[in-house]
Image 1 (spheres, rainbow, N blue to C red):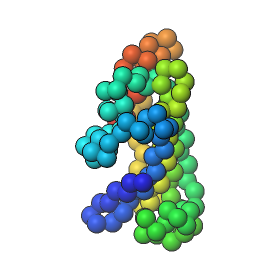
Image 2: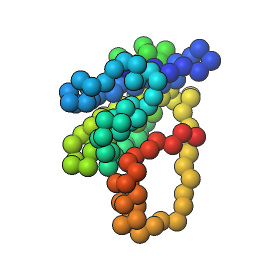
Image 3: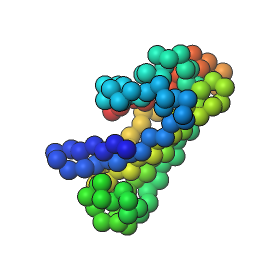
Length: 131
């Protein structure tokens, strides 16, 4: 579990799930110093595919206490599953953001042929861009 605060107020609470074969290699210092994908890549695991869902929902009671809001208040949930080249799940993350602290934006570009997108994704792995 991990929570983030801004100006002393909690804004995000997340839970990361890892398969045993990944979690056994991970050290607490790895999580504190880097995004989780960095040590995974250093171990030679090639991240190849990700699925992400986003939705608004009422805040579950067990999460509300971490976000300092009442259960049932709106939150924005992001769930992300990342798999390796063989299709094995490498990590699953669920993050809840307070409704009053979340903004979502994206930059849109003309699409490339599907083969080019797949080759780039498989060659470089997956990256999360922060804005």
